[in-house]
Amino acid sequence: MSAIQVTPKAVEKIRSAFAKQNVDGGLRLGVLGGGCSGLSYQFKFETKPRPTDQVFDFDGVQVFVDPKSMVFLDGMILDYKESLMQSGFAFDNPHATKSCGCGSSFSA
Image 1 (cartoon, one colour):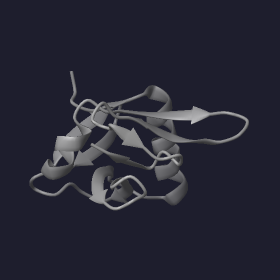
Image 2 (tube, one colour):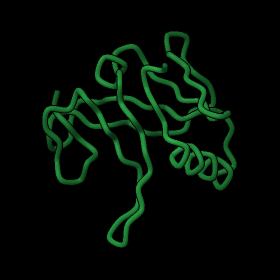
Image 3 (cartoon, helix red, strand yellow):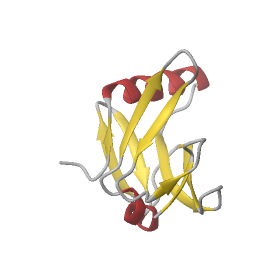
Image 4 (cartoon, helix red, strand yellow):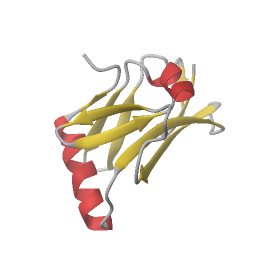
């Protein structure tokens, strides 16, 4: 089992975003200092992984995670949720002891 999970719905949204942006490569998931709760998620396209990255493959979609971020992301599930009020990627992170209202930052 992977240390990070990406749901089929999230994989499909990432794949369609790659096609819309006309980019090749993978999705970088990371953690940066900052945000309302102390740490924030990094989420961006990159053409290739760095030498120290862990590379995950979900049905042909590559996800790159650097070693420092892996400490905070191990066991995380990336999902895509749609509702009448809002749609977007959702992070279900077992290391987050507290998160902010926007859902894009947390503390561990």
